[in-house]
Image 1 (tube, rainbow, N blue to C red):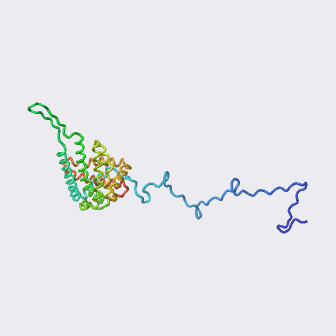
Image 2 (image 1 turned 135 degrees about the vertical axis):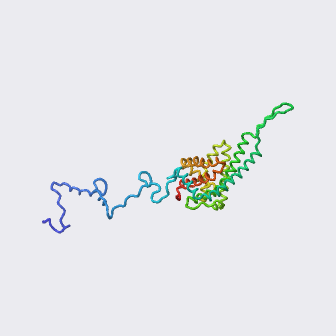
Image 3 (image 1 turned 30 degrees about the vertical axis):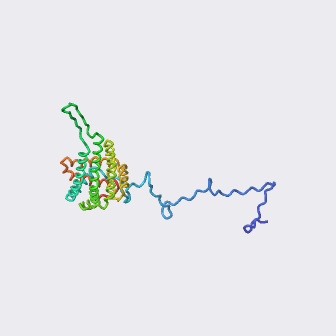
Length: 306
């Protein structure tokens, strides 16, 4: 019988002689795992190529801060010389308006200083040493004592600080305008639309400074340092008093080196004006405020007009 025929009609092969069993068919190829054929390699480029992975967001290879038009890193590009130079150049460009506004601020401070001196005269007494001419008995009175003197001194500082901050808030607003490319205007200084938050913020800072001064002065200086940008946040961002004080604390804490350098150097520059009978404050105080506005803008990552 012929073994050739149409497909499917050939009979199965006869088992081999000897009665052996038919061997099993070979196993099918594995669908996966070892022994599976490797998948085809992806194309190297062109159509059908997979897109490149997205850029890293942190660690090595991360996009640097400020790239692609984002905000600059806080404090980048700042140095104390640039802050002083900025304050001086903007003072020269707006000298007339700045002098008028500074006179108003100094007048307010002088009034509060006079009130403080009056309180000292009324509440404090000096030490006295007397001898009774008839009996020869000596009497010594130590006056008000150290704690009372410290209390009245702290109260005087608080009053002066309130006056300085209330009027100074207007100077801060005008200084922030300068950093945005606007002129310094005396009328801007006397816009009291934010007088409520300014007063409350000033009272909170004055009270905290008052307590810190009673605790042997140093805590008062620390409080003044960490709250030094509170009114900038009130005038620039419209924050509430507690929010502004908290924001100032965090800003100083996160930029402690820059903030401390400016607090010391700027304070020395502002205080140097008092050496010339206070007249120099008309120059040094505005330079300090303009430099502080410049520093605040840099620390908060905001642009500063040239």
